[in-house]
Image (cartoon, rainbow over all chains, first blue to last red; front, side, top):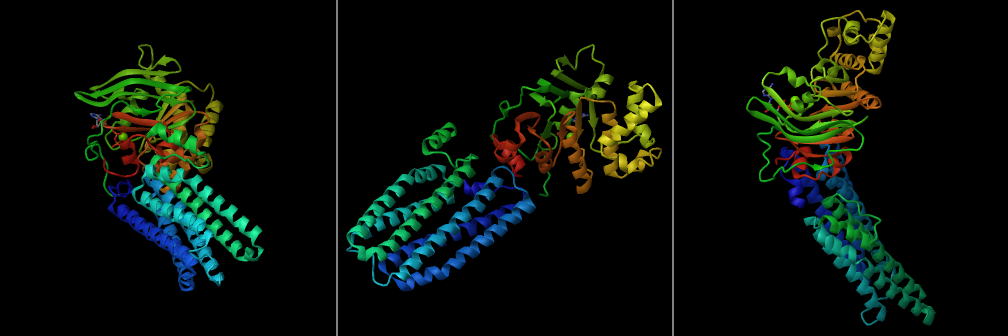
Length: 241
Length: 278
Ligand SMILES: Nc1ncnc2c1ncn2[C@@H]1O[C@H](COP(=O)(O)OP(=O)(O)OP(=O)(O)O)[C@@H](O)[C@H]1O
Ligand SMILES: [Mg+2]
């Protein structure tokens, strides 16, 4: 779908411009995925060096966002895209904002990893399991989202959107566990709080991931499905699948 | 885009045009065309087209070169009557009256349904006479002062009066292209039409003159029903509320302009407005 969307213009130059945007978008997606993966690992393993790397690399994510913005602006001004081309450019402009924010959240995880002097979340501790469960879910969703984006696959996008509740469930589980911890062992409050903030960052990533999937559906179907609840959304899409 | 799209190179491939999709009809139609077929001798240029022109709205007719836009537009004020070998079938109803009925006078009809052409074509007469000609032959003015007033308001509505008020007696052909086109619009308006048909009215104009004409079209729709043929997608998107996409003499899709340009239903419409081969 994405491929089709780019090729076949009478103007080969236009095809090439869209291809360039696409390459940059995938590069940005790959980079953000790496940021999230590394930040998560840095936090769980207490890897200070890795955390530093993540923080440094965030500027690359920002630079890519600016570059893609510029490429899209140029296409809007010079090509005046219509129909699915127009939706594609709008989709990309919106999606890179969410990708950039996911990058910011990853940076927050990395900063938290640095602040954690001892290994707060070591493998033998219980909060590790809850935290990892949330982190791994987010990572998996992000990977699937980037795949769905590459193929502009609305079925996959919808599947990921349906996982939204899972994110909130895992977040709530983790949170009630952390609250318990704080009650029982007031000494751990400081470290538990930093896990809480990190969990919040992961949850926000989940929100941005959902935005991306909504735009994948908008691009492919021409339907704006933001702010619909899940049942309505599925009903709407069933109409034209 | 350097390649010119024509019906020949924009093949429809295996995409079948099977009736039109979208919403070609509306509740507040000024004109209703049904099952229109047009032939030039043996060649059929329009195949079973049905659509409405919504009252006080601008309808854009778009499509590749040779798809029959001008042919269809010319049927609406019976200009095709003037082309030998051209045969029109189907029904054209304006406010309940059939335009091709025996008792319909085509000359009077063309005053009610005016037309503006691609190339501005003022008469080789003064600016004043260009505008006054129609009202005179249709007896719309009973006195010289009444005629003066029709000329002035028409020029004003066409957004030209201030530029020409000091040289109304000078030849219309001495105006710039954009001014000439507005003069032709003033001439069309002077006979108080109900519908205005425009066939690529801005194709010979620079961007400023084009913007002036487009602004004018937006204002005119308050009083008139307008159909415009244009090759500029952006122009269609800017000035119209409804868009009809023609392909090989057939109406492929018609709907709200907003929808056609962001989310067309038919693949051929999508290909055309996004500049792709079919
Ligand atoms: N006077 C005529 N005599 C014979 N055939 C004609 C005449 N006018 C148009 N045609 C044919 O009818 C078909 C439709 O032509 P028409 O001019 O309506 O197309 P169009 O959509 O207005 O094209 P363009 O965008 O190039 O103006 C074409 O195949 C054309 O050759
Ligand atoms: Mg024409």
